[in-house]
Length: 162
Image (cartoon, rainbow, N blue to C red):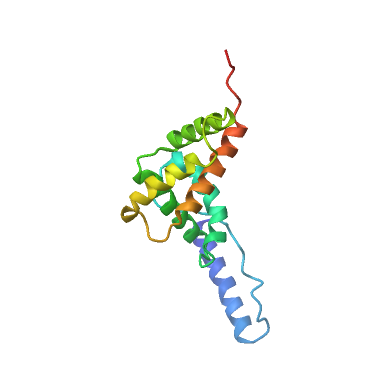
């Protein structure tokens, strides 16, 4: 079937449907067909790929801290604001993860108090408060970030000790 024949056939079907609708015989939308569903990738709001795992984690928990956030995009934006706090301090995802692992090891060896690392992070973040977004809670950021990194570290295979 040629394109012209297909167009003519489609026009005839459309005319018949319009005539049927004008006659009031069928008021339903049963002739509507869903052709394709496309899911868009989330807007990460400029966050580097290395931070995406933390961002995805924060998106899940950010609404509990910020009940005014209703949309998924707003949750990604808020998570990006939190991650940008770490970027402001010069941390990379790997560096913060390594520092968390190092602190966990020192805590297990009873060399440091459990809350020494979170306090250090809070002090650094608070001293840079003017460079951070207004809508961030430093305690929430630190607690949830460390929670994420502890989970990640726990899932990783342990290096062989020599």
